[in-house]
Image (cartoon, rainbow, N blue to C red; front, side, top):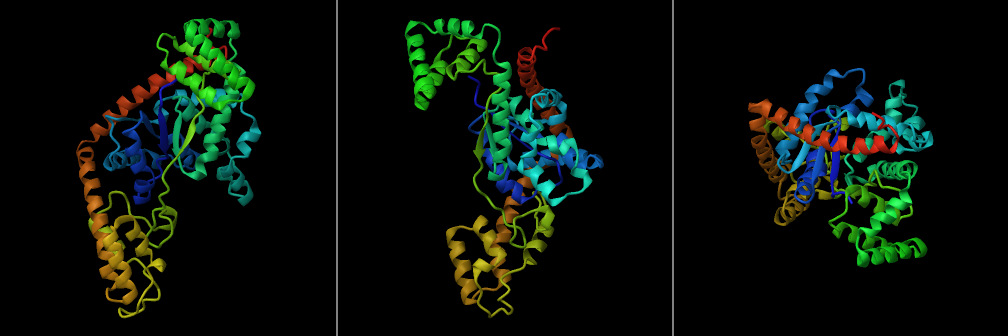
Length: 400
């Protein structure tokens, strides 16, 4: 019924590092080639944990946007915007809060873990409890059907699906829905109407999922339906009402565990990162001083690559020939650790060179980034306003 659409965002929590590049941004660049994509700066979400120090958020917003552009996110293909500049997010969040059972929020893994750990009072706020609901509003307001996430974020997409179903069930039954749906079926034409009825019966009576998909494809192919009739026929298929909010699917991102300088997952919390646009001399110093296999106390001691953090970076950056060279040289002690690090260092510096080059126009003229964001916010808000018109109408709030 609605166009395919991808929605994803990031909190502006500081400089991005290579873990963000390999774990998220490369996937965004790929997705923008395949689908209409909306990527947003989640500045309201940043207030969840930084409500008492909001001054750090502003600089992070613009720095992160430059990092996105440097990584290849293309404003000609994707819509880039800032969450707080589309106030409809907050309105939908408020309206969803009226119908969301408290228990749904309390069972979200992040909230449960915080309670079990007895975290400080700074996380005992509605903002922290309700942030999954705001996440759901972020997705639902664009009727996005695809949300790229890691496995740990799948529960957040699932609660969004539940909220969409609950909203459609509560508010999708417009007065005279059955009569309007039957009238919409007649607009399909005799042949298509018979096929629609047959597929609907097979799904509702026999649970035939294939029939449901065939019926949806039939509606997608029908050109002469209004948006309202199309929504009704989708809802009528599944025995519900008019479909107002779209249930998104979790689009599992390719698994990419970017190792840090100490072999753990790259994270600012561990202090083991290389920033997305770090100075070459700083990158060089960090890589050359990386810890290696502790068994190699002397240059002549053989080592084991599987015990060495440098080997994990080889797995990200090196080709098969270089991997074989590093394994053979480490185990035979025919190469030293600094020599082994050199191909990794060169690959990272080459990657960084491209990132710096793509970022430079935006650093030279910050107005370019602001212009991109202004255009993106305008496009995003237009879509958000369309959704909110339907939401207000469904909830009886369109009385003028």
